[in-house]
Image 1: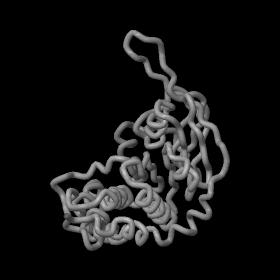
Image 2: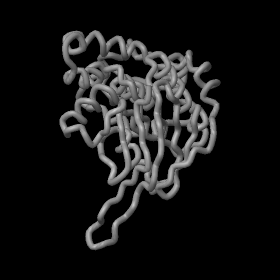
Image 3: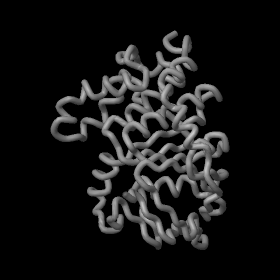
Length: 255
């Protein structure tokens, strides 16, 4: 099933007292369930604007943007918010954890907006998600007692705790060292594969991009497919994701 469909999408902004500025120009992209897509681009190429569209945070100036077969322009603002919270998980370069809350409390936060069983079992579901990313022993730790890799794993658990159909990762390894970054990507791949979620990674790092099955380049607002990566091999190697991250983080946790 096609989760996201973009056809001839353009995004233009109007700076004060300046001509219109086209950020994205004629973007075509389909994201299917279980896809693994990477988008590489330099600073200023339009990556953040594209991410905002994919995440239903913004709407195009022209062209077609559909989520699960429905035009996004037909959604009210409240509907977009609810779909985004339920169906889309974001992983950012900055972990954005609440400093005065434990790892468990941070992961519980998205479940406060859930309904039914997810809401009433929110503590157990969050604890299971942290266990899944290798942090079952750190439930009560505050962010400043966690290493960078552990903080990113908490952020990943928080992003995925509601079982989104689409994961958007924006420079997810940018704040990590090389080894920890690769292990975190293995973990994201593993969890996405297990939940059958589509994964779109926005990055400037060709090594991270090559993990995807489909590789795109964004340059001056124009999106071009440049070929297939090594996603199939990366997916088969991702089964040890949580263990690999734990190894990369070993000894770097609580001070």
